[in-house]
Amino acid sequence: METPVYTLTCFLALERLARGRFLPAVVWSSMATLVRPDGVIVLLVVGFFVAGRLRGDLRGTLHSVWPMFVLIPTGVTLHALYFHSLAPHSAIAKAAAYPVDPVANVSTYLGRMFLTWRSGLVIYALSVLGMTRLRDRSRELMPFATWYAVYHAAFMLRAPLFDWYLHPPLVVLTLFAALGLLAAPRWVIRRSHAHLVRAQISAGAVLLVALLIALPGYYRARRRGQWYEDHVRARAGLWLSSHASSGSLVFTESLGYIGYQTSHRFVDWPGLVSRDVPTLLRRNNGEGRTNSFDLIIAHFHPDYLALRDSEWGGLSPKVKAPYKLCAEFPTPSRDLGSTYLIAGVICP
Image (cartoon, rainbow, N blue to C red; front, side, top):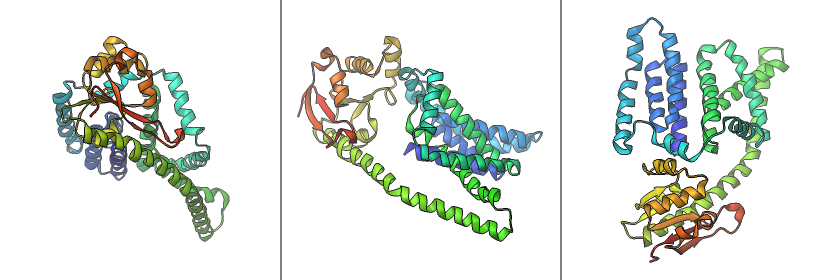
């Protein structure tokens, strides 16, 4: 849910900025910053363009940016009260767990963007063509292009690659691809306006047919992923809700579907909801996920472990000794995902 909300707030901020509605643009970019720490990128982009367009108009600038000085301090204060830190806790946790080599990371990002889904190169080609509209619509389109470039540059250099990090900029990519689809016939047909309109409609129809052809494959992939969440991870969470005592502490890496099904307390890797975990990992120099799991379990002594079978198998014998397997949630095929196990100090 976080990624769609974040994407929506970023797009609304840029769309309002493109329309010259600076106050709503600042509000939405501030909300994006509160949803995810990297929302500060869209906030900086909005601030840069607002300052440039209102240069010399101090009163207008203050009228446009004042919500930022209310929303951001409020969010930071609430965050600090819970996590005892002004810095974004999720960024701290991921920095402790995922050391990043910028050169290797850039290569990984580019490979995922351009080589993994090669049919998507058509979309990139159309978006490049669509960027030719920057010449005559720079005021409206430049904020979108700027955010797209800065977002990817920041993530390539500083953040490990997760697929959902690539989703928000797809909105901008789609926008420019649509402009490219409208511009493409101009490069081929240089006749009357009527011929051009028919060519644009034909190009849109071809794209629509292509999308409809691709839709069943996309649906099958999404259905398989949802099956795994509903029948494996969600069942693990429901088991905890039904069998574990209310005061139990659970350790897992997969907070999402497991955590949503139960109200138990959790300690997690890399510490997204556990404010002491990043400090523990940094102080003990945990290298690799398995060693980090050992450190966390040995330190917090959780009552239950909700782990993939490979994660359970990778724990050290000393850490595993107090636990015994309580439940198993297998998949029909390894291609669907890993089997989940629940181990407990006491199995009900």
